[in-house]
Length: 406
Image (cartoon, rainbow, N blue to C red; front, side):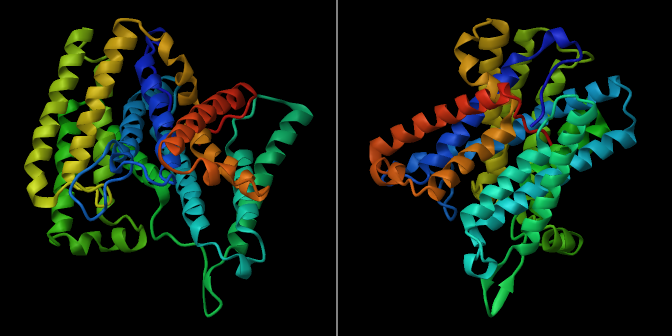
């Protein structure tokens, strides 16, 4: 959710933007095709009780990896502008709180009880998204009456979100439930990984040895949790933060992204593009070997964030990024990516936009997509077209001034 530049603005790493844009396009596609009937198993998440993964299970870790890649650039840029450590932490905590808030709201959409609330779920969901747009939109600098309007819109969005949370109800009349955190949603999990990875970078900086050590620590954390040797110290984290097995796995993927990105910092000793690519590929191979070692112990499971899933995912991200870096930044072959690259500048909007579109279609009683384009190859083509349209719409809204930033 962060942009990425080197310390020198002229040395922008275009491949990171392309990687983010491709991930967004793939994310929209896999989320949409999940509702299509009769598609191949490899186009859906691997069964949670199984031992394996499909390319679909790589989309979420790709986001985590890219978030990690962006952290060193973003923190260094803020330090160059004069931010103190306290100011950095304030920014990090505000961004984390925003991701957790949106994550909680989106998780609770599915338990919404229209009878208890007295409101259509679609209306509540649409109001939630409109409120989020009002709160987190990047308004242009303005003074006077225009500035007051922008501030009023932001505070109106905050008030609306509070109101929507207050009236929310799920469960049954005999057992009414309010908003809960059985899990944090994709955005919330990204928020926790972002917070942890930022803490790691603020402590170790660009010291690769320290960052590598944190990879080992996060794996050890999973092993300790799985063996129940850390039940006592992790009790409150699991019970009240609802993180379960994801305590360190997601942060490990983001940390792997940071390890790759520090190669591109001004102070990195690795300046030659070929050496960078070799370093990234070797790092990926090391993680693949480690994942192979852990697989007999815990299997490959996205839901449980097992070490093998985390390590394999981070390794694949290394390979994909290395290829994109060679193609886009080294060989300067980037025209093909102009379709997806701009969407990388507005990932949060791209994430919620498909939901907004489907809510609007449902409100107007339009079900043609699921009725006539919801099965087999026709459904797959529909999802592909829909994904491209959502990327284009994201780019168009971005140009129109609608850009979400936590």
